[in-house]
Amino acid sequence: HLLSILNFNKRNSIYFFRISSGIIPFASHPICDIEWNETFKADLKEIGDFINKNNIRVSMHPDQFVILNSKNEYVIKNSIRELQYHCNLLDSMRLPSSAKIQIHGGGVYGDKKKSKKDFSNNFSNLLEENLKKRLVIENDDRSYSLKDCLDIQSEISIPIVFDTFHH
Image (tube, rainbow, N blue to C red; front, top):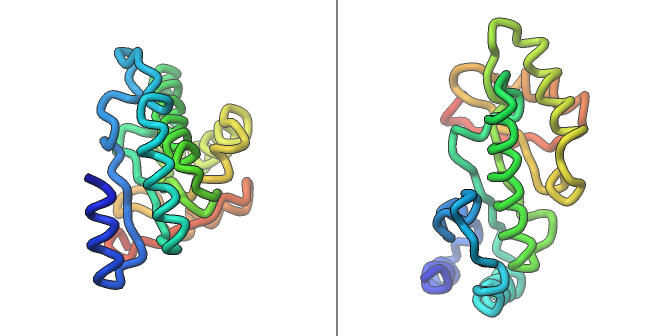
């Protein structure tokens, strides 16, 4: 149970926690036909109240298949659906926009400059405002360095998380 983990962390003075993307299995998949945010409304509020009361910083990091600058429209559509699930989960816990969702820059596709521009355009034109407020971009160990993230940040003012393990 998530509250048990958060209580353990509090007892051990750990005030940062990454919430698993799979906390509600299949929530972002089209097969999911339940209103999970209503079904778990009381539980999500309780978790959010605990997080807020104890000033715990939380984040989420969707899997590698979330690619905002993909050349495949289907991948972009699924990526947005996945990101919106993460946003809805944090919103359902009534967490402030400081609860962030970390994503990577995506693919390079033979033209990094254009790929960075595609990321920026899709961010600006396809995402809802509440989701934009939660997103941060993180460097990776293959395609997007801190400098690349700074280039994207200068276009769309998305916050950056520096991951030293990817550096």
